[in-house]
Amino acid sequence: MGWVLASTSPRRKELFAQVGFSEANFSFKQVAPDIDESHQLGESAADFVVRLAIEKAQVGLSLCTDEAEPKVLGSDTIVVLGEQILGKPTDKQDAQRILSDLSGQTHQVMTAVAVTNGNTTLTRLCQTEVTFCHMTLETINAYIDTQEPMDKAGAYGIQGLGGCFVKSIKGSYSAVVGLPLVETRELLHEMNHIELT
Image (cartoon, rainbow, N blue to C red; front, side):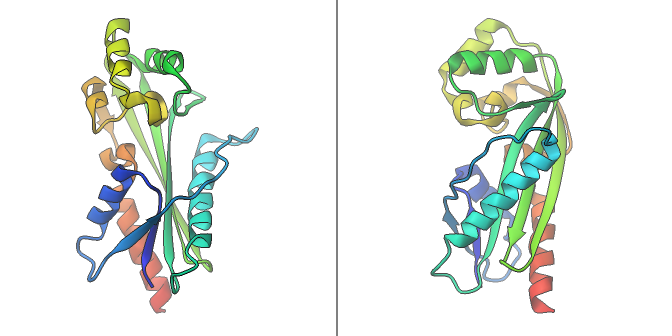
């Protein structure tokens, strides 16, 4: 009856390990769920990110054929500026556009977490406000040259060099990194309690 993290992200792996520090014999393995991350027409940003987290958990569960009664955690993070969902940049020009849009603005980071055991699926949505300082085009291009923005939603990593641009944060820092610690611990406890009753 082990935990499975449906993600290959080293950041989520590190955060999930932190979540279980006080649990007796806590351990987990990782699987790589492959899902269609396309946004559906008319779908709100919140509904979108929760759906992706649930789908990752469900696909992760289907990959656990060798586990007895696995409990799988899926998570997804999106960056939202106004009504616009900012995904991972497609190329350098796209990264430049995203970072120019974020410069001097406040955006929302939404991270959804879903856990499932096949019978029950529980979710949490964590929303954090992040305000960027003003960035010159020269600074933006120097940041893009480090390659850090290229595989991250919103084209920045708060735990890396991108943290240099974060003027203020209102909400969960760990959620912006990729997994909200408090909410994830709550989900683990809730799922364990369901399985014991």
